[in-house]
Structures are given as structure tokens and as C-alpha cells.
Image (tube, rainbow, N blue to C red; front, top):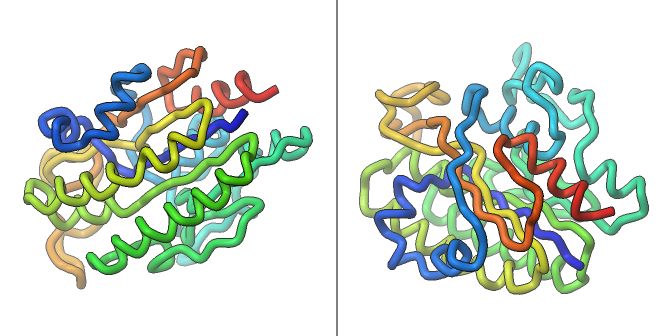
Length: 252
């Protein structure tokens, strides 16, 4: 049995639902399984959110709130909690984690992978490279039939920061949609989720970037409404932290 946790950083129903006919693989996943909005109780910041998802801990428990502290990038060693891959690996399970962006560069477990743009792809060329390389590596891992693969695509977050409410956003959702079946078809149980949603910068819960950057003006930022789709998962997921417990319940 292979369990796939597929993270799509910043994916939002605000784009998906009005355009569902143009996103056939997401539509298929929604029809096969269950879906809902996960409304975050915590501040929607990726470093903290992905840490909560894969540790099962609240932000005040894992105490990892941002990528940089005291002028230095934080690393896995700075975070004093166990993640789901640590727990299952210790129990003898075959577990892989790929491109998990709770730190910069994103974290990998039991696999070698160099993230595109140090985990912050900024150009269309880098967005496509991340999509291609993460997909290729994920398929390679899934072909080995691990007990668990946790993997995250981060490109939509970058696209939406710079192009929110522009047609190009849907184009990149369609590109992500086009690879989903290749991954999900190789798993028996699947969770697809985001770490937060997205909205106009002025309406955002938090400004994660300055309005003006060397790459251009920031047009969108994070809100608290993450997406969740589950296939063949009995455990009820209502919070980010529940993902950890759902995995642990399914893989014994």
C-alpha cells in the first residue's frame, strides 16, 4: 500500500472552483474522494504551516514560525519536533519526503533532490523546471512503491504573488493539474492539500513579502483558506495538524 501526500503550496478554491471544467484531474479527484476547505486558526505562513502539517503540532508547540531567525536561515536541526517521516522510518516503514518547504531550501528525507531556485522559483522557466523535476522524481519514487511519499509543489505560490487575478494564474493551475494523475494513479491512499489560500494583497491575513521586490510588484498574498482533497482516507481532517494523525492511523 502506498500513501501519497501531495502538497500544492498556496492552492485555493478561489481559482479551482470557478474553473473546474478546465482542471480535469482535480475535478476527477474531487469526484472520487472528499473535499473541503481547511480554515487555518494560525497565521497563514508556509514555514509554520508545513511544519504543523507534517509534525502534527500547533505553532506554539513546534515553535517554527519563519524561515529566517537572527539573520540566518533556519534548518531542520533547529526544529525540535519529530515529523511523520521520522516516526514511520523508525518503525521500519519505507518513507520519502521530497521538496517540503518548511525550511529554505526545501527539505528531503531518504532521497536526493536539489530544489529549483533554492526552493523559491521566480521565473516561468524555473516554475516549469520545478514542475517537471518534482514530477519526475515523484514518479521515480512511487515506482518503488514506498509506504509513504510526502511531496510539495511550491510554484503556484510564486506565480500568485506576482500575478494574482491575471490569466497566467489559471494557466499554471492547468499545468499542475496536468501532472496530478501521473502521481495519484500510483498511490492507494491520497491527501492533496495546500498550506494556505490566496487573495488580493490588500485583503491578505499577512504580508509575507514587501509590496515592491526586485522581481516585481506583489499583487497577492496568503489567506487562511487551504484546500483539502482525500481519497480512501477514513480519518477526519479538520486542521492542518490532523494530516499527521491521518497518516499515522493509516500506516501501522
